[in-house]
Every structure is written in structure tokens, then in C-alpha cells.
Image 1 (cartoon, rainbow, N blue to C red):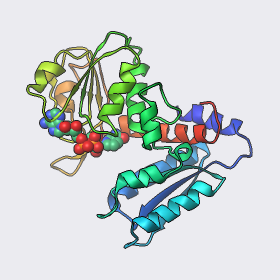
Image 2 (image 1 turned 120 degrees about the horizontal axis):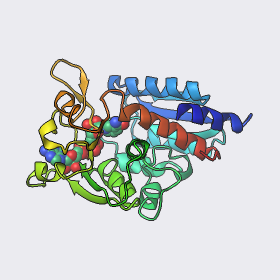
Image 3 (image 1 turned 30 degrees about the vertical axis):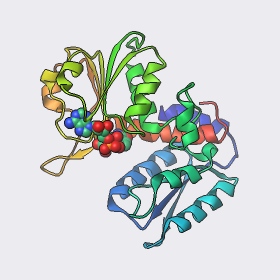
Length: 266
Ligand code: NAD
């Protein structure tokens, strides 16, 4: 995907393609993401500018900065790093970004568009899950697909994108009575909850395609997903590792959206 993106970048020629990340202060959790994004952007040939507003900046300051970026022609894409400090409403902030520069695909216009079709700028993690499933060559049409997690930015858009492919989609969440009854039926299982070890190998249908979106800190400080890798790896037909699975593909989707926002057909 990155080499395809690098080709698409080249095809844009001398055009400026800039991705700007905005953050208030410098959050250590966000720093890892920003570094990964910078490295991947450089590899593809996209310039990335990082703006750190002073600690103590409020919503009006952030909105002013977004307004400025919305007006700058060379800026193709804008990312607002989370977590945002208390008192700042992420929905207000995301809605302030020009939908054509909303490369995270979280503006209500881009979110809404996925109900009708695949939007130009889809939410990155959902697009990554879809791409990973498609890369297996499995036929989504009629497949029993179970999505665990129903958040606005992950679970719901994943379910809708897979529905477009005529998958039979079940969405599970905190209110689901017996999770295992659903997961065991799944040809394709996407887990996006944020609970380490929520899904074990004995909850999975042999040969299933398992996409682990979760990012959690394990007991020994290491990053782990929502799926217990050791008990699942020999049962599943496909399994994405954490780290190194959905995460890097999500970054690739962010860069794809940036190139699309700059006018590339990719
Ligand atoms: P969220 O907290 O907004 O949503 C969690 C979802 O899990 C909710 O729908 C909730 O109903 C459901 N849930 C909670 N407990 C459950 C249980 N016991 N059984 C079934 N469902 C349960 O979280 P989110 O923002 O959607 O993020 C989910 C995970 O994805 C987190 O670990 C987050 O760090 C990770 N994430 C990964 C990427 C990536 O690129 N890989 C990007 C963003 C977030």
C-alpha cells in the first residue's frame, strides 16, 4: 500500500501535499502516533507539519488554528491528535475541519456519506479493517460477519462498510448478552473494544478471519490487542497481530486520504 501511495504522490508532481497535525501541548500517548505518522508520511513523500499549541490553550484557540489551516491552500489534510484536554468537545473540533481536508474521515459529512456509499475520505481505522479483510481474498458477500464494539469512529463505520459488500453483519457491544454465541458463528470477526484478552481462541470458529483493532497496555507494559493471540493464532485462518496489524494499515489509510484530498486517484 505504501509503495502504491508513493507512486500516487509522484503522479501529483510538484504540487505541495502537506499534512498538518495539531495538538495541545505534547501528550506522550499521542507522541508515538505522531512519530509513526511522520515516518510513514516521509516514506510516501508527504510533508508533515506538527503544530503544538501551548498547554492551556482552549477550544477557541484550537478552532482558530483549524480555521487558519482550512484556508491554507498547500494544506491537504488536517489531523487533530487526541486525547484532547478536558473542556474541549471533540465533535465540535472535528466538525470545524473542512470536510475536504478531514483526512481522519470523522467529520459528520464524511461519516454520513458512508451510509450511502464509500466516501472519498472514509474513517481510517474502519477503512483499514475493510482493506485487511479484502486482502485475504475471502468473499464478503453473504459472509457471517461479527463486529464487537459499536463506537462512532470504529465499530459502527466498520459494520456499515462491510454491509455495503452484502456481508451479514451482527454488531455486538456492552449490552450483548452472550458474546461467545455470536463470535463462534463468525466467518469474519472484527474486535474493537479496548479490553485485553476479551476474545479467546475457544470463542472463534476454526478458520475464521479475525481482525484485532484493540490497543491495550498489557500487564507487563507491552501493547496487546483485544484478542488473546496465543490461543487464537492456531484456530483462526487469518489473524492480525497487535502491534503491527491494523495500526500501520490505519496510518496508510490516513496517507491515502491525504493524497485523495490533494486530488490523487488512489
Ligand atoms: P470505545 O470505548 O469508544 O468503544 C468500546 C466499544 O466496546 C463500545 O461499543 C462498547 O459497547 C464495547 N464493549 C465494551 N465492553 C464490552 C464487552 N465486554 N463486550 C462487548 N463489547 C464491549 O472505544 P473505541 O474508540 O471504539 O476503540 C476501541 C479500541 O480500538 C481501543 O482499544 C482503541 O485503543 C483501539 N483503536 C485502535 C485504532 C487502530 O488504528 N488500531 C484506532 C483507534 C482506536
